[in-house]
Image 1 (cartoon, helix red, strand yellow):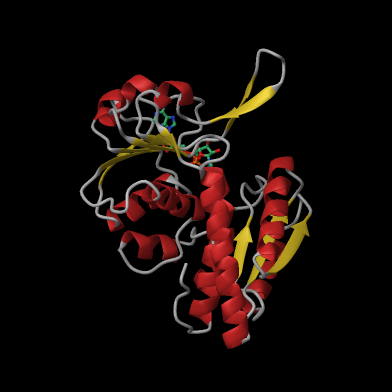
Image 2: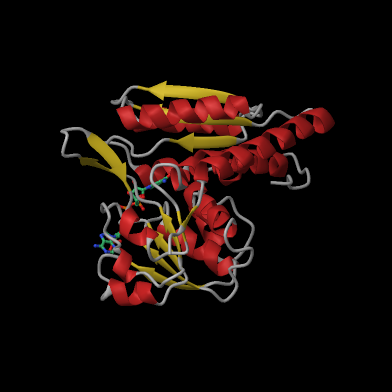
Length: 294
Ligand code: NDP
């Protein structure tokens, strides 16, 4: 048996195209151009790559993109002043502060300063709480992408056994809530969980969001299960270079799983596409327009 490889690249491209269509419609019918503001503090190379990609894809979808680069030693008060200004700016419907922030800044305070209506990363406690309560919320982009990828394989997740390995606020916890909303039966595992192989063996859906290269082995998986690999790990190769691998031993899993996302080319592609979805949704909600068709 060889698992079907879930093509995150193609699914993300399709989603971006649908967002662009809806953006064009909202512009035409309502004179509204959704706008996303991204705030980058410092010059971490990985963060700069992400921010550049967000900027390009936001513009390609027909939305306005505003970039704010602040020095690594920016005072927290100045960052909070910028966020307050973006909260008031009618051209801005989504605000994203690129994480991680330099150590001297208090991430929780910074996230709490974002207007929840513009919190397109879904990290504000108001959105996390609404999501946990089963109410309408802006949800974090990576978990949203994981659900879309899963639904490219299974039209309904109702009654399926899912395991989410990892309980971060960014990925694991919101993913659990989204799976519950889909009526899956969810186990959440973390660094203190006992016997992960046994827990995985019962799962129809496996989500690995750990940050440990190839930790989930093929032998742990239930035959035919769907595996969504969130992990992005850079490891050295025998040739002295580096390569990206996920949290799942991909080659092993191919022979057991029914469907699996590759790394790269899986979940990572969906994260920015879902950011565009959230920005469009936020813009429509702020302007009291019907929810968009994506
Ligand atoms: P965090 O470091 O915040 O969380 C990791 C989680 O994994 C924690 O809950 C931790 O448990 C758990 N964990 C650690 N070791 C083990 C173990 N041995 N067994 C079981 N669970 C373990 O990471 P993130 O959630 O931010 O990211 C996870 C991965 O996803 C990373 O590789 C990251 O690069 C990637 N990522 C990818 C994105 C994408 O767009 N594709 C976006 C965001 C992240 P505990 O809580 O007990 O410490």
